[in-house]
Image (cartoon, rainbow over all chains, first blue to last red):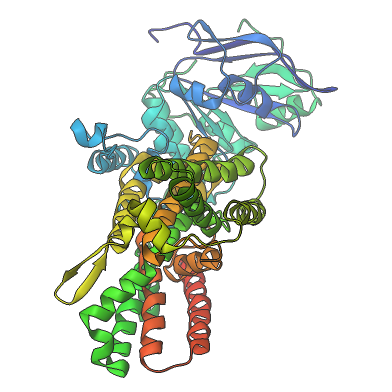
Length: 260
Length: 360
């Protein structure tokens, strides 16, 4: 690891909605090149803390450092401009548009020269080539055509397009929200392989999931969220799934935290 | 922490046996499709094909029934002339419907702006060109007003434009005093208002500038919708607004631009209508809102948004024109023309529903 500064370091994040404290002085850390799973019971606030990191909610207090530099995002778009990509649970794809169109939504490439400058013409061949390359890199080019509408794809293929889009543009890290929740067993396997492929390219991933087997399979560390804050982070090699569930629900005391 | 390049360790590997299973996740099933399914698929990929086929079939049918009278260059160019104003309105309507909206006020904006142009140029002595520019800007303003209610106050487009339809209609009655501006007065004071009524002949066909304007409007919009990022965003918003938001599209700004542009096109139709009709009548085009929706729907643009080509609306407008002309030349009573258009709408929407059910 050439870089020991954590990719994301958040300290004392607080978010209140009226009398409800969604995030209660929580810390968060994502290290370079890792898959960090975030687990927690429903309502523990695991989505809230991740949303605070990517700018989807603005925390009331606390500080967030990205690669050591303090940041303050007002929207996920600002985070995206910094190279932080999010794969939403509902994927955020436009079903009637093509795969290539979907990969470039909101960051289309225009043609060089006056056609692009004055007529604002899109460079479709370049975008299609890029989309094809990215999907091929991730072993997803079993689709018939890059121009085919996303709605003609299976659930796993759509997830693949969403992951490929994130992987293509992420330079800092990727957040994935329940990427396997809507998929069958075989399609889930494919997505887990994708997660490992992306990690192998050195892009760290924050994985929010309820699925313990999937979490234990791909995560390097597990961030356990409970009652609005980080309870502990564990190494999945040292604990069992039942341990994790016990920490998560409060049935068992967490291990004494080592430095992190 | 683990080295990212090593293959993932397996935590508790109870899905281990899956390694032997078929890993071919994302392949297509090579099943045999019936003829009908194939047709459905082709139409799904090319939504404009339906109106094109209907247009060709109706041309052939009326050519056989009504004979040479129908198929003359003169009659065909007359159809083009007759649909030009509704066609331009349908172009504006298509933009809105592609965003999954609807605009009931298009014809009201059009007539209101023609009254504004006429009042300024004929009665107030404002130079004609300036009157026209004010009218066109007024169209943009009226469209932005719709867009503002829809994006800022979050009102449904149907309700918003139902309201503004009445508002604009009342304004145009007030401004015009419910009186037409006579063609002779326009000729004396501001003949340039009738610019789009001018025509030229090509081999028996009389092409008016308003028909050319319609075609230019469609070609420009087709380019904008298909070749620019803005156009892709318009489709994405109609498809799934939330997803478009999350993908980083500034959806409200784009929607506002769509309504503003639609208003501009309506005002342009208003200018063209002065030449087409020859006078400015506050009572004209009262059913223009619904006629424009008819053309869009027959053109295969989905009322649910995100689907269909703007060119479909042009073909839809032409189909309505061909039916009207063909039935009239065949000696059919006007009421049966209306009857036929009604069935066209229902069949068009039924076909749209069927196409949208296409299975992957």
